[in-house]
Image 1 (cartoon, rainbow, N blue to C red):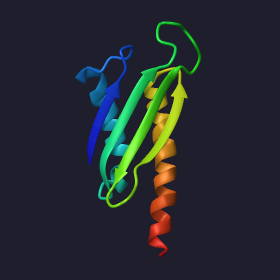
Image 2: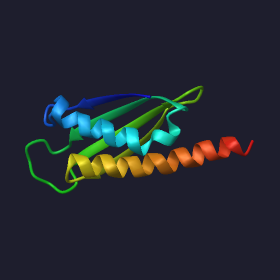
Image 3: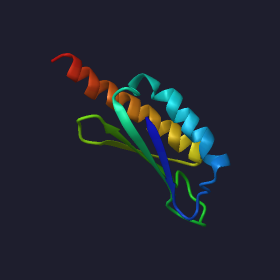
Image 4: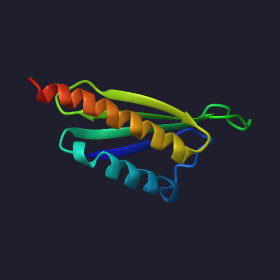
Length: 104
């Protein structure tokens, strides 16, 4: 499972910042790793320099073998919290999608 992180101009995309995110995603989605070819993470600050609540946006897109991509979005105050929220949504969505495939 390859993990690609994309950031806007207002969020740092250095290895120091992205390595913990990659590790969190790898651990959280490990049980789906045989079905996922790639995860794309899109991080953006929707208010840029202005302060605001829940202005960090995380979009996770999972590319599944032989299937259409699956995407979820979460907003929060911090990058880590937005990623965690999106991971919770992605785990739930993948459980539903892949669970339905097992029943056929």
